Image (cartoon, rainbow over all chains, first blue to last red):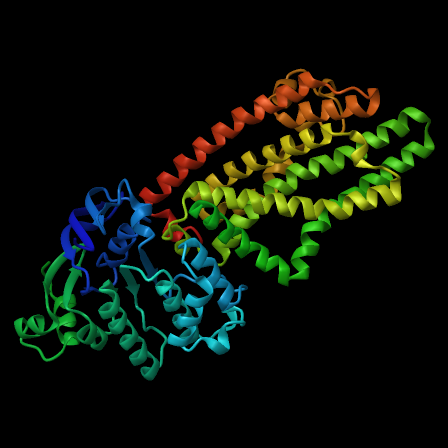
Length: 242
Length: 265
């Protein structure tokens, strides 16, 4: 069963066509990159995948559940991380993880929190208020929160933003291991093209609400006659046509 | 069972904040205590300056202050708890978790009930110590008054939360003002008949006006006015259904407009 099936998805706001008839699938154990400049429709697409936003038309099936009618069954088996959504600042890290552990009905929660603390080196931070952490520490806590329920589908928006290169590299390794061990599917929105090249099996390039190209990072680099994904991204972002 | 655990998660999230912050605990108790002190001394003054009817009225005044605080604190308990999620930019995480909207509401109501009980506790003690007024002398019917007034606070809060879904944090000031605006029509300190005849239907459409008529009947005549109590309960049921319908509609509309993503802006 596919982790994500998106069919002819459209989101029309009164003044803007944010997502214009896109279709794609994501298989378990694969990492799909969703790339595009500002206003390309990435956030709108992710919001619809998460059930935060109702599509104007089209269909989204996540882990076999139709998001229009059965989104809570899917939400229990997926998770999300974004540096643009905060965790409650006045709660300590461990309290935040407890809250989300209970929300996702995680069994043996104390043990799961210990595992995540070890995995993301959160031990010294567990009893500190989340609001007092550095940007990089917050990103690590947000990632721990996103793995608390061992999701079959993980949606990540800029997962290594604010992390130093060493920690960023470590987090990418954690994500690769997690994908392999859990056979989890990951949808990744990122502006870090080196990260995309390293992690993604396939990339969707979005512009003005449409998917304008897709393929493996190597295939896209070859198709555009470039050396890096960064150059491919710039070619697409600066081209006149959609 | 999973549903109860999700509700517990959100209650735990808010209790954890209060457990660690004494200024927040003081804030919960501050207004009920202040209101009681102002009205309590005023009532005492009239009771000592005049004869026994004024003394009876002073008891009704103190009881009115304390019971109306149940509605005000109940409403604020829901809306402030919801606003906490907006202020901490946490709604995005909550709405992409398996937490159902009904469970969110159940958690908000639970936190509101806890805040109301904690907030009114010092006022109850002060009323007894300073004014020799024991609210428990209202008898078992006090529980029915309390529950009805709390439910009224809750449906008002659901209406305000619906406005937050529609207008975002820009509607925040309504959270602090709407229930206070209802006070003149709730007939807390005077009977419904004291209002101009054309305003009386407005008061009679509110459960609070019936509860306070019932409260005065207990204090002045030592009689439980079951008719008013039933009317209050029926009105609460009707207003709650309307509030739930508005809340559900606004939540659905917010998901269509994308307002759940930008509600804090």
